[in-house]
Length: 99
Length: 298
Image 1 (spheres, helix red, strand yellow):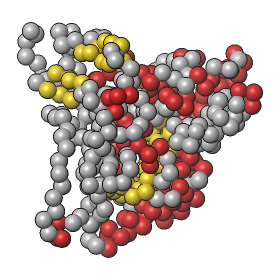
Image 2 (image 1 turned 120 degrees about the vertical axis):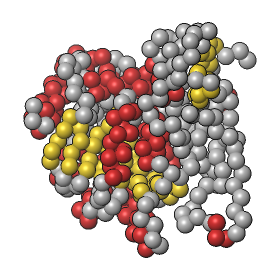
Image 3 (image 1 turned 120 degrees about the horizontal axis):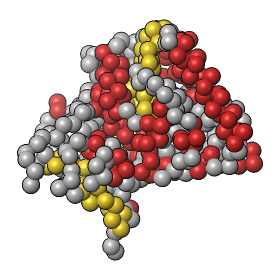
């Protein structure tokens, strides 16, 4: 199942572990893009039919699956609203962010 | 609570793109990258010239992608990918798929000669063009992928673009490459299927992905996926695949095409168009659709 990604430290013990191709040292997890958001998606679990469409169309990979239900990662969600627009039963509401 | 039910996910669950990237809200190009990497898997190397994706993945040494990226010069996506593939084969790595990942400017205009050269040599690379119909990264300048009637910063409303979009698929078909296809982010299952097929094929493969851009098209960010779908349903961007420039096959058969107005009214870049100009656009789309259907044998 689609799990939430976490930051992992890359350790190269010997020079043999170095990859053939250059690779990045880390992810972009330090860039908390949730601060860009004006409206936040709120999923109503009672109405959710578990179709996975919100997970499929999230451009920020900010929806992950936990206990067979989609969960929004508010640290990275930019609030584009694609999930609310594409939801077939309209169980996702876009609520204004309180600052 | 309702009775226990498991989620049915229609795409591969592995994620090779992480959150925290620098794309705009509702970006279509990030969805394209997410689906392509789901299809290709971890054994992938990307050659990215100057385009939106050169910015989105983040500054070195950070990157939101788990695969290797090579940032190359604007006009060299296809030639860098050819070189990278040759180098990998020299050190004995035959599994890695080398991808040239360019925007429409890097494919239709600036990178066309490198792409044509690589296609003619039939280099073993996958070339992906994600098409957002202008130079979005530098500030929405007109490219040869911009459609008729569109506003950009270099084709303002009074002098909007009066030439149609370049037919890159016909150019690539003339090269007789082993596999080429068009895909849209509105149909991710079809996109992943085509990527997997391209991965299995040897030789130059070309994938043209339609990826709406809310910032440049002046559309609402939540309409990105809807626009990707409407482009197919109106017949503006037919989804098909071809082998060796022949055997054209429609992947999404649209029975009743929607009027082009449905697609146009969601975007601010077409707001200035009059009814006659819209009719002209519709006629152009109809003619192209008839040509594609005839090519695919009815």
